[in-house]
Amino acid sequence: MPRRPGTGHLVRLLRSTLGDSLLGVCLHGSATLGGLRPHSDVDVLAVLREPATHDRRRVLVEELLKVSGVGDGLRPVELTLVVQGDVRPWRYPPVCDFLYGEWLREDFERGVTPGRGPSPDLATVLTMVLLADAPLYGPRPAELLDPVPEADLRRAIVAGVPELMGELATDTRNVLLTLARGWHTLATGAVRSKDAAAEWAVGRLPRAHRPALARARAVYLGHEDERWDGLDVAACARYLARMIRERQGV
Image (cartoon, rainbow, N blue to C red; front, top):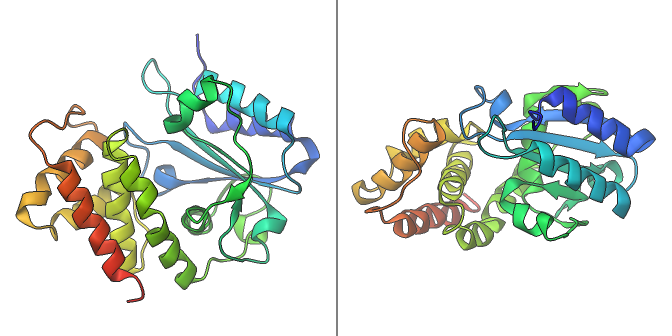
């Protein structure tokens, strides 16, 4: 029987795999922005003293493949590792040491092991971690991480748009909700849950684009099945992307 990916299990996995290199583990995302929804990930950030070795990365992937998922009592896990020296003192773009997410499962099952690399989206993740202030192991996030300047958060949201648009066909719900949250953050300066940001955005969309985003929100909340027939999700996504780009520098 697969184990649920509770935060206690994730912390134990990180401590046993990363040893003394592990400085802290923090919860963020939906769990700290109003509570987990039926399709929410368990979002966890771990701060390391030094980059994870290939063997340790592989262990993390193999264990997460067992406990992360959709259905059968599982919940998807999004695990991000950062080396403290890569993000403190802060510089842009930040470097991500390791990323596990269910949208990458097929790659991981083929033996791909995530490596280090620049990741503008990490600016948003670190902002949410600091706002949540929810340590699972080690000190509070502000003792491990520097704040992300507003200008870098804004350009990270804009920089993430092309990748999101490329994933629209395979991850429709999440792409629409993430675009809506990016628009909301750029317009208001606040970081809110995906469903709250989508509710804000639906009321500001042209009437023709509202059904697609409203469906994404309803699916995320568990109110509707995931189906997109009869909805022009591409047009909705393009409009959201344009709103994000227009807010750049505002």
